[in-house]
Image (cartoon, rainbow, N blue to C red; front, side, top):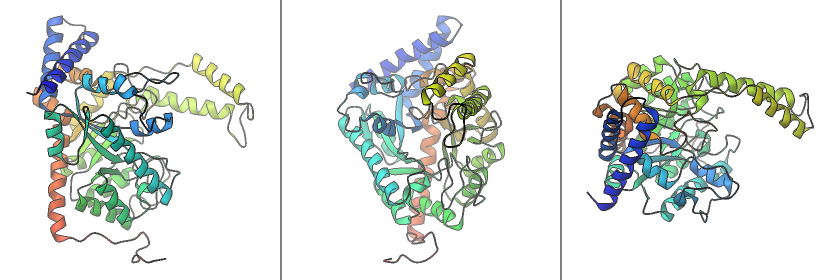
Length: 437
């Protein structure tokens, strides 16, 4: 074992032990045993998180050039809210592979969306280049395992919205060349060829072009990500895909009736497809009480200030802000717990199977997370909770990263086969050949 990897293992073991003591009311001997088991699992199997929004958060904070060493130092710039992600805590959390989301707003479309996406990919690549002792770009399952063995964190790119390719198969292919290894078919809004889970249906799933996009992603070896899409789009994409699909950051809808969750019938389809659902940590996707609180808060915010037409304090932003703060004081947000996240993992395991569940935190892309899961150092605490519930080491390894590695390898094998028999798709959104005009 290399010296760097040994130091990493020691740090994970210490973190695991600390978390077990913090979250377990039983004897220290039992705590230590759970921590040691989890540390061993994370040393042998790379923990792969399907979704982290750090690139956009850096952009929003004005830290795109990474001159501020907050990722390395583990502390924010003056006056800023701490990030959920930094290198010391990633080390402590035992993470071996991270899909960095290159999200852009759904309102940004056309050529501007392509440019902004490329800028987000550049942020990822610049971050990796700045911290080579911590990160290395990865493009395959083999890359992830090699980088993990060498004691670094494998960094992958995930595109979080089909609008980011500007309805172009050529742009899809170029995003793959730049490193994208999954694309979420929609974000919070419908696009020209797929329906979102959080918008009124227009296409009732996928259009013919949308299904062709799925086919071209299969041919490339880019994973089809179905987080954010409507249930009909989920079902149609799974029926269309020749490769396993993924949900990079979603939950079980049977536990929380939220449109961002995955219905049980779709979970059963994921099992047949040999795909994966990676569980999200956002409080309002984990806890029904938090989801209701969010809805109530949104209603109150609109009641106080809903420009341009209404609200009790329209045109008085400070008064509206104070009124909302008073409402929040009288109606504190419910507490979501780490155990609730484990409940979602266990439900997906029950319905889809142990081979079809993983972790997709959504760190630095959400406003709140459950108690005990506030940053990238806390993955071991979740693993310890699953171990406490009776999960065997092989099962912990599967949910940590083994399942994701298997999904990637199967998608890579499908791509290798399709590239022999199929040419790149030249289909356009209007069904016409590419033309100069």
